[in-house]
Length: 113
Length: 108
Image (tube, rainbow over all chains, first blue to last red; front, top):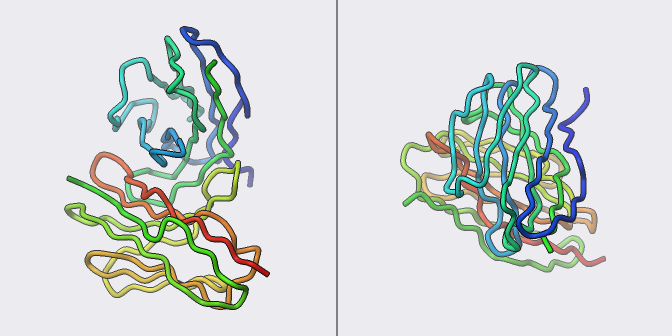
């Protein structure tokens, strides 16, 4: 059974640009969550999508957005990049979300210069 | 305020030297507590879920326990391959709260 796939693995962007990250969940999983991981803050929840609807959202500015498609694949977009957005972005999939086990992808390492 | 705190931040053990990692939480309405292992440059790997106080789960050299206010991850006779960052997470109604992790180094 294939795991969670995130693409690309690495990205370098310039301040002010925008970026789109992709996540393909485990087959059959309908919930996809996104997290930002930085050395100082640890893993911070961005948002969760379930059946193409955003179900929960963390405390991030509106520059961070996402969507989920009918095949459960999800994308995350960050507009007007700032240096502080440099981080490892992780997505996690689970069967129904909430308090069920979540399985993580390898992450996308975003560097903003 | 919902919060998850892990201690210690870093732990160095000799191979075979058992120890425990702590995860304390202040969330209302516990819905479970999750332990993950994360290797450098990789995503977290699921280890355990605990749902109620008194529950214990074991996997190889790891054993997780849960009380009403905290969870422990006991590592028995660790090996160098157990070196990693161990994360705990607690779901609330709206999101998962992760601790900042314990970085474990096991020295041969």
